[in-house]
Image 1 (tube, rainbow, N blue to C red):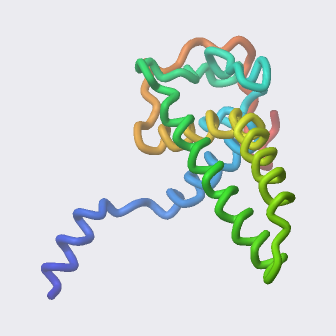
Image 2 (image 1 turned 180 degrees about the horizontal axis):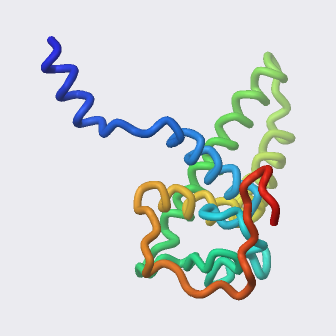
Amino acid sequence: MDRAADVTGALAGRRPRHYCRTVMSRFVRALRLRCPHCGGGPIFVTWSRLLPNCPVCGLGLERGEEGYWLGAYFFNLMAVETVFSVWVLAFLIWTWPSPPWQLFQITTIVLMVVFPFLFFPFSKTLFLAFDLLVRPATDEDFVVPHEEARNLRRGQPS
């Protein structure tokens, strides 16, 4: 019994206590459209175009693989499917027993065309945050930052 628990703990790779906080901070930074590594930014030139590197920490935002942004497209697809599922369920519950099908069709088409464009920059930063958790940044991922990095810790002077 104890041996099984030891093996399970070893396979699970015990995480430090601050790991959950690190995960959440990376995703919160990504949702703010900031660099998931340091929180610096802005990292978008336009709504759909990222800078090559974070202006604060110098992290390369395209991590050097062909087809890297397929993961961001996947995040966008999952978000659209989630919105669609919630929309269908909520609409049918709200209007049952006689849903207005024409309103449903028009609203669904508009929602499915507009939402992917609105969510696109978030999918890029969220995928970058996920990628940094799976494959942590190394020295090769950084370039010299263009401006001096500020201290981002709370309670410490800049």
